[in-house]
Each structure stands twice: as C-alpha cells, then as structure tokens.
Length: 516
Image 1 (cartoon, rainbow, N blue to C red):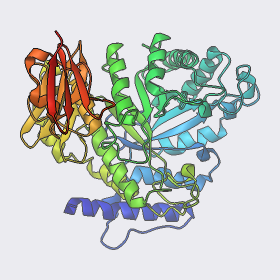
Image 2 (spheres, helix red, strand yellow):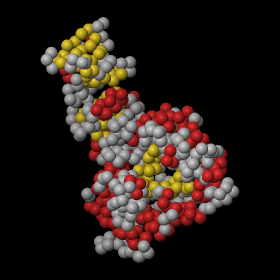
Image 3 (spheres, rainbow, N blue to C red):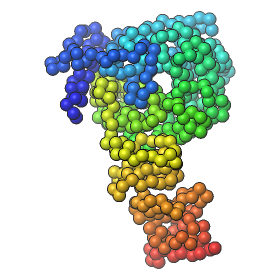
Image 4 (cartoon, helix red, strand yellow):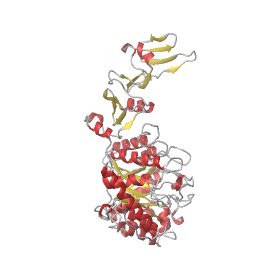
C-alpha cells in the first residue's frame, strides 16, 4: 500500500468513526494524526447530477431505508458524502406512496430521504417500483405485483419526476423484473417493456434532462421463478424497448468467485454482461452504458477479508469496460451481522456500524480513484484493429496458468509468455471456458493450444478441439475437424474431419483414415 493510500485509509477510518458516533448522537473528533481538513469531502456534484463514470461509486439502499431511524440514514448519507462517494440509489415504492387510490399520495418518507441525501450533494438514482393493491394485474399479488396498466404506472412516474425536479437526476424503472420475487406472478419481458416505455415518456415529459435507466436485471439463470437476463433483454428489444432508456442496468452478483475469475464460466455475470452488450450493439445502443445498480458480496459463507477482495476485484475490472456506468454497492449496513442469512449480511458496515475491510477499500477508491491494474496497462499497449470489433471484457484470467485475456466482438487477445496471441472469438470463448490458451497464431483454420492439443475452427465447421495424438497425424488433406474427440466403446477416441477421421489409442497411437 502506498503512503498516499495509507493516509486515505486513516482519513476514512476517521470518517467511519464519526458516522458511528453521529448515529447514536455523540459528537466525534478525528483520531490523532488525521486532520479535519484531510477528511473534508471533495466538491460535490450539483444535487441532481448523477455521474455516469465507471469509477463513480455509490450505495444502493434496501427497503429498510423506509423504516430505519432517521439518525441512522443521516449518518450513512454523511458517511457517503465525507468518503467522497458520489451517489445513492434510493427505492421509491409506488405501493407505499399511493397505497389507497390514484388520487392520494403520502410523500413524507420519500421527501425526507431525498432531502437528506441531496442536501449533502449526493446524486440520487431513484428506483421506482412495487405496486399498490388497487393497481395490480388480476392474478398478481404481493408488493411487487405486475401492474395492470402501464399508463397508470407512467402517471406515478411523472408525479415523482415533477415533485423531485432538481433533486433527482436519474430514474430506474423497476427492480429485477426477471425474477418472480420482484415481478409477480412471473417474469414477463413484454409487460415490463410496457412499464419502461410508459415510465420513460412520462419522466422525459416532465424532466427531459433526467437519465432513465431500464433493466435492473438480476444475474440469474432460467428456472421456474427466474429468467436469464440475456434472453429477457432480447425479448425486451423484440417488444420495442429501443428508444425507451438512456442507460441499462444489471446486478452482477457472484458470491463464489471474483468477477474477473468467473468471466469464462457459462451463465456467470461476465458472460451475461458480454451477451447483453452484444445485443445492445446489434440494436443500435452501442453508445449507451450499462450501470451496476447493485453489487455486493454477503459475509455469510465468506470472510470479511474475502468480501473485500471480491469487491476490490469488481471495482477495478468494471473500470476497464468502456461501456460501464457507475457502481452502487449493496449495501451500507448489515441487517443482522452473523445471523447466517444472506440478505442480512451484504453491508460494508456491520450492524453496529463497525466497518468491514471492504468499507476501507471502497472509500479509499472513492477518495483517491480506482487503481489501474498492471495487466490492463500491458494490454493497452496492444492497439486493436477495427476488425476486432468493440471491446466486451476487462482483462481477465484464463484458468490458473497466470495467462490473461481480453475479449472483443470478433477476437480474443491472450497475453502469453510467448507474447500476445489472437484467436477468433468462438475459439477464444471455447478456450477460456476450458481454462487453456493458444500457443501459436491462428492460421489456415487452426492453432495449437496449451496442454498439447489443437483447436480447429471455421464458420462452417464450428469450433472443435483434439488432443496431441490426433493432431500429430493430421494433415491439411483431411480438412478441418467437424467433431471433438469422441470416446468409442473399445476405448479409442475418434475425431471426424471434413475428409476423414482419426482414431487414437494408447497402443496404436494416431491412425488416420481418408473418406473423401
């Protein structure tokens, strides 16, 4: 840790200590060696601005913020402002503001939260969601029931925008509509797109400069209660979502491995992010950013130290994405530290407001700037050719070899001991999924790979991998592989090529047979 970062950590510790004491009504002084000046917040944004930079760090609040004592929420807003976090994501629950009918509003709690946050110079992303009973669709139930009429939702969104002009700079339409937990009775991309279109028009009519964020999709897989965000976005575009959002949002939660290490795992957040980005490019939205409006790691099955490592990895890798927007960490404080319940242990602070390791890292990154990784600097020296297409990934590890890679639309770039080697995108994706990397340049439809194998590829034949024994007897006369190695009943393996096949056994080695 540099001397500058050590000083920042001391300053942040003073800030957190103050927030702990303010929350219980006790004045706090900075510790010895940390001056008041050193913990003074940087110049703030204009109240209704929300920074769209990937290095803009903020806090995402859960529903609890509606019922927490004001002293607790004020202490967190003070902490966020003093630690130079730029933004907060606040829920605005339609079901709580209009619980009775379309003509009756209760703004008291929202007014308090918005005023307390904006008066501290914090940009606000308002996440509008939940449905009053009177506005729910038939058959839908609970606080997150599907609304019956998008136009009614749009009128509420307009009322929110009108009331908080000059205080709220960005509006997110709903939260995780690709899961039944937040969209009852089932995820419905077409219905959600109706809400998005109505909300976008309504907000823009009132506040044309406001940013409207669509999506807020969870990083889930298809199940009885959830819908993969990639397919959900595909259906949104088919339903006419284009033109009805200024930015898209995603919740790339991943608890087992770091964001970067999980990039090549099928259906992991990195893979989903890549696929959604490609959909946005294909639908003319390449200039729009993807915001991480929730990200966090619960300290239930992992240590606070590991939480810190995973959050630090996410922040640094998110910064490397040219299409990334701001990050909102979920959340400020545990509901009940150590109770074993995942949802209760996402906080950067423990329940008693004692800071976890990740709080120091997030605040130091906000205070000094998110560090640039060494591997990013190395890869930046490689000038991309326009034929590579747009950049899709940060620099991420491939397997456990120490090799790093970066993925574009048409090419994967691997940083190996022999230098930088490119593979066609389908090859690069396949290799990364297996945790291996290329050893030779891709030429004439193939390249050799780590572990002694070879990968063959063309758009007509697909991507196929064979072992070294098969590759050793192959000649161009056999054409490209049209299958991987397939185990046979007698213990041999066989790979089929365009003009023949090659078998391999321990006893005989590779045997090639031409068929055409």
